Length: 405
Image (cartoon, rainbow, N blue to C red; front, side):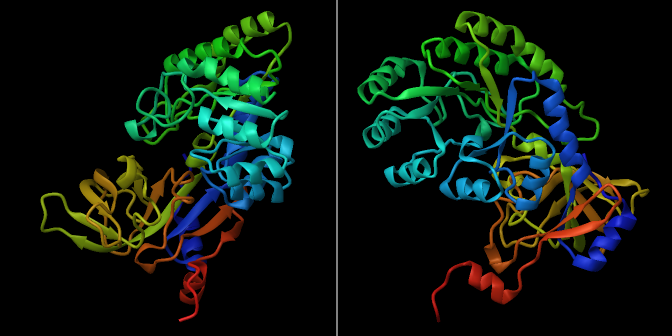
């Protein structure tokens, strides 16, 4: 996981203040290469752009060998095209889609990956004789918490196997071609067990469709959050599915294109958020350490109970102390890290909140009228490039779309 050294952090803060997200360009490139080398040559990597949609970051991934973009909204489709991806390099996996959005995506030339028979029937009525992809629910899920499991009985995503006959009826009625089959079991799995089970089930369902061009096994590969944690081995995941893919190809009498759609795996570990200690409240059994960031920038702990490792860059050799690291947002659950052991913090110390490259950037808010983080890209020679500036008060108001007052 990326952690800037103190001198670099001080340089960044001198130029851009705090809080600021710092992104390692070499680590972004390294992650693409790792995915490409682990999986077979017939595997395409489609980045789940919802994880981090900063155009500079997506361009780095693209130049490093990214094959395409997985989108979930019409504006993500438009951004992907603006960044040079062709319609054939974009897939749209919406949720609870309106007819208007499905039509707009289709008119952009992008294939829809449809996850309900309701949407499939409505799409077929609007656009008969066209290609679609189907998102099935393999009814096995996995993830870091229940909130991020996207398959099984307790999730809204995908079409269950019990609806397979209905899918076929809709396809026949509107003369649709099923070009792709898709599943996604959740975010943050660390063993191959559930992933392999989902692959087996989806490939079994895929045998019912003769004109398939690709099978998409989704993303969700776990990332390292703690320094003592062993990173996953992508080669294990590749090996766990290769036999099943080979058997499918033998049955299908042609080699099918495999797609993966990592988001977090590609960008999470490449970013650390620099923040300053502003306040220490030591009258509690576990002291509260206040900072100049908060859940408006790093919402995953409050939303999912997620863990982010924190390092005290300024006082790195001090004894460790158990503390609660909190933000400057007026909410009781504004925790960055709860009951974490960290080198004893002092006011004005620089803290690095690690693994903040995914979802933290795209789930930011203007709550309490605080601006988004500034974002700075660091290359292999520690050259700095501002890739998102911090908004002024007037810019902050303008971005919210208020009419004249």
